[in-house]
Image 1: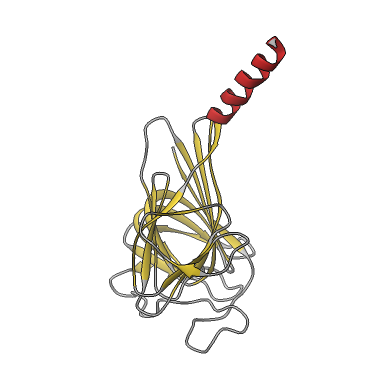
Image 2 (image 1 turned 30 degrees about the horizontal axis):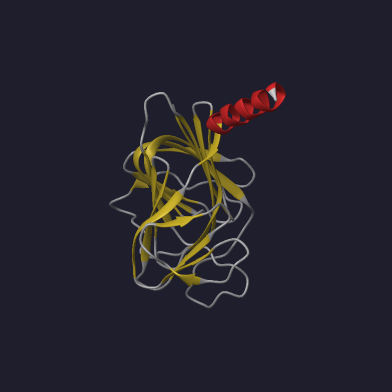
Amino acid sequence: MRKILILTILFLVSALLFAQEQAVLREFSGKVEVMPPGKNWEPAARNLVLPQGTVISTGFNSFATIQAGSSMIQVKPLTRMAVAELVKAQGEQKTTLDLKVGRVRAKVEKVEGLEHDFTLKSPVSTAAVRGTDFEYSGNQLQVFDGVVRYLNAISQGRTITRGEQSSIQGLSAPAAPEEAAVATAKTEVSTKPAGAPEGAGGKVSLTGTLKVTVK
């Protein structure tokens, strides 16, 4: 009996130290669909909990806002993204999102005593970020607040700061930073998976990740 009690206490302590966070669909407009793991596509609903492994898709002139812990992610039109991992453990909140195609804007709010490990994967590039507010599509990056180290698939990189943007084409090094007001992108989608219709974006290249760490 005593052994069972000890095992129960250890299990509860472990659950408190390593708990899965929730992603919640707070707002949406237009045609937005979600596909929970092992299920078919279904219409979006406000305050819908998105379990780990859920894929979200937005149509033309549509958007969705997802809350993942202290992070807010705005999913732009013609975007498909998967919730890969959401975990809080021992003072660290880990969020991993897999951007299949399209564009998102993410804002990571600082929480006292909590370190954020925010990773956004894309088919194109890698960016190491110190900051909290940016828009990313893989081959385009615009920084609203903070400093971003933006790298291509072969680790050639540049530092992009607040109010600047850069882009990557294939294996070329990231373009020199430009003022975002001068070079604001007009296309919402800038990557395209195999078989996607024309107009859905540019070319898919090698896999990379975007990582945000806020301490």
